[in-house]
Image (cartoon, rainbow, N blue to C red):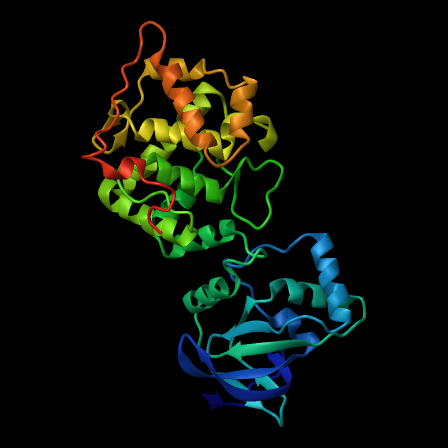
Length: 359
């Protein structure tokens, strides 16, 4: 680690600083501990993997805690190792990114604008890069209520082929749910499904082809990657598009204004429909999803306004399996009836794995 004499203008200033040795990823690592000078808060950079700024209420609570000096240290990463030590005051000349603590920084900057200089403690790692910072961000936050799995799934696009494909498709003009999927900490009113549901449905739709039913979002991405390897990237994306095109054609997606108004976009209903398609060979040519006009016409007439269907769609647990059975009965009944061919479970053991699959 090198000391230099950089210009102090526009560089991060750490006061009461001291170098320390800590264990990160099982390795002894030299870090800097200290307090971020309030005037330097604006020099801390933010990468895309960070979640969005939280609600006004939560920021105000953090401001109250900061006034009482009751918040944990923030975690920063320096993309380099250049600094100047001026008797406990450190000037860092390389770019510094927030790893954990964006909300605390936001609250502290608001207090600074109000005339109150609050001191944020910081743990600062050197020679970092975006991949390392993102992994540490997830390690520090995943599993805690403050980090939504939607944010984690968005960040997985830089690591997992399946996540990159799903994110790319979600932004495609032809996709019925374009700009209507929640990738952030909190959903907007016009967003219809979460990224968590989006990925889970992609797994359920392809669950006869591989491990697509894990509850842990990291394991789910790993399972979806195996499915992509089997189907090819193009076919996987086309299957997801075809699934949501079915919903658009039968019940409408683009015309939906708010998420509460469309029962068929609830997670339980989407999963039931995905399982209907996955578990029957009628709907597949090789690994490609194909649904004919007869089935589309039957689905279009499905009683989605029935109180029983609405109640199940708003429930969790075994609700999807019950909805699945109702869908099967509806598609099979009438004249001409559709002869659904259930996959041979002995030949396709992945078809009916429980929800722990892939974990």
